[in-house]
Image (cartoon, rainbow, N blue to C red; front, side):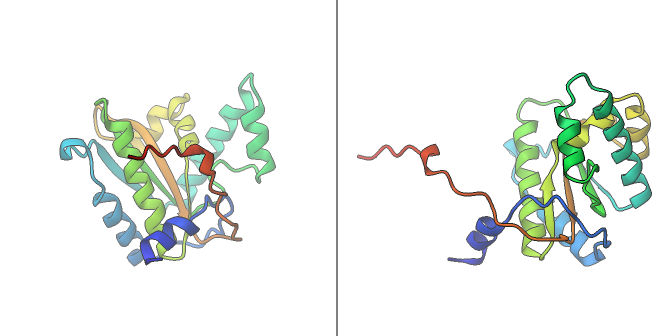
Length: 185
């Protein structure tokens, strides 16, 4: 098996980070992998925002947990509390992908987030693609967070990826071959 397929096969969603800051070279490699992502008609409907200010990450995290705790449906809040009570799992790097409202943008941002996750794993780092990071950007402090993270005009939260040194490792999920249909000649 080649190195790319090994990286894909071994990558897992990390939900417990040590909090150790990333090196500049790791951040640069991850950003370059993100920007190498293909997009429909090469529109690149994203802006990548790399946040390593731990105080700001923790502030956004706390706001997200506050919003979850106030929701009528407590299931997401309870799930996050069972995983340590942090929306961002103590990650030292929050990569926010903002996007324009074009139709294929969600798919393009998904491709970009996967490139980030695979690049992180190939560097020996943990990652988790985190759609729940959008919660604090939709709350009462959302406008302030968007301003502080320098969201471009006309762009909204698309997806995020948390990256850092994993506190522990786990096996990737089992492959479910029932999800595949082969049509053969």
